[in-house]
Image (cartoon, rainbow, N blue to C red; front, side):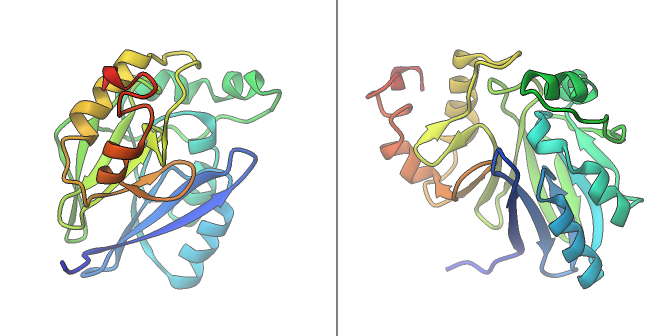
Length: 222
């Protein structure tokens, strides 16, 4: 059994039941927020009540349910830079148009400050996340891997028993399967996957039990 180096708390909310994550480095207490969606007010309350030092807001991609709460987190962590892949910027900046697809209204969110690069090590406190490009569900999608903690924040790339939808603008099934094959299934089986919707799962479980990946339903692409 390894020693945990990060704590991952999930905040789920909204009509899309999106999972936002508050990730804290155990050694230093430094924290980052990943994909603040509709549950961002509850997360902001936790940050405020616990006086957490939020060092950054990290966006795996720019679909509205993953970014609609950015302003809520910025209100309690005004100095925290917003990180996003450059390929996701056009979608992030078109949030009002995205909302219109679903008959909703949303205002633009704060402009991002920093850009992810594939293969970079993102460090906060004494902890590190490996940034990996994983498009297919959305342009500029990334996943964030803690090798020390055997944990992966996968956004909407893969879920327990399923994969991300590809019917929205910029989605592509073959690209998504390539991302899963090269960026997720290359990790050891005991790595825990924290998805943007639904419960956590593991690489090993999805490798043998996900119908999209095992040859039962289109799995030949993976």
